[in-house]
Amino acid sequence: MKVDPNYLLIAKDIALKISKGIYKEGKTLKGRTLLSGEYSVSSETIRKSINILANEKIVSVKHGVGIFVESKSNATKFLAKFADLDEHKKQVSELNELIAQRNLLNDDISKRVAAILKQGSFTTHSEIEFKEIVIHDDCWVINQTIGDVYFYNYTEATIVAIKRGGRTITSPGPDFTFIANDKLIIVGKDDLSYQRAITYLTYGAME
Image (cartoon, rainbow, N blue to C red; front, side, top):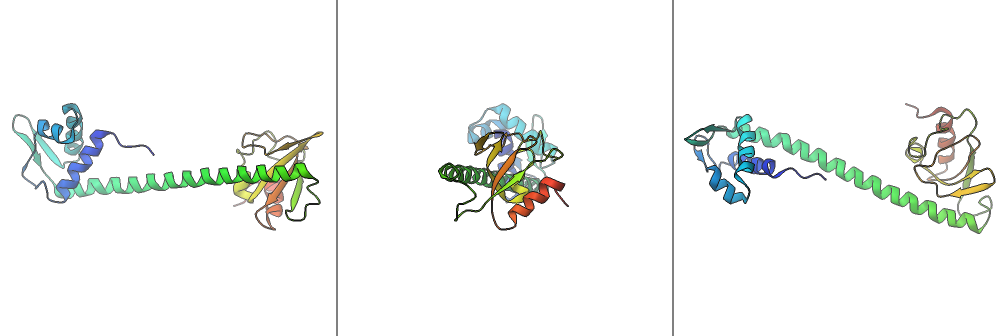
């Protein structure tokens, strides 16, 4: 997750202190030199922080006099904007993590099922039901990759192998490109996964 630059973090911290009344409206804020020492950053970083606060009308800068706290209300509004943004970033980060975990799980499933396929015929295995789907000449996924069409997302079925010509390609990755007459060997999340896969390959995503 991307971290805010120091000057923005400092601006947010100063705004927080203003919103809590630690720095009071109408009072002089610490000078740039003192703030620089307090936050252990350069005076240029503090200048950027103060500029942000001044643009938001949280503080005002009177050259030769000092920095003054202008508005507790504006400080609160400023922080609220970032609270929404931080929550959005958190949700996106958590979603990306879940997607990564799901992809790892799908890869593990594919590898395990591929190992089963090598041990014998997929049509006779009693514990896992494999289904075969043929990619016909007019299928819309031709020349697209597994990742491009979000196959699992729409079908909840995992492609564990693809028969192409006289060979079987096990555990095809998201960059694998479909061609006509490919035979997909899938294992589904439930009994409806096969039908969802057939419908999806025939009609695409349906609203």
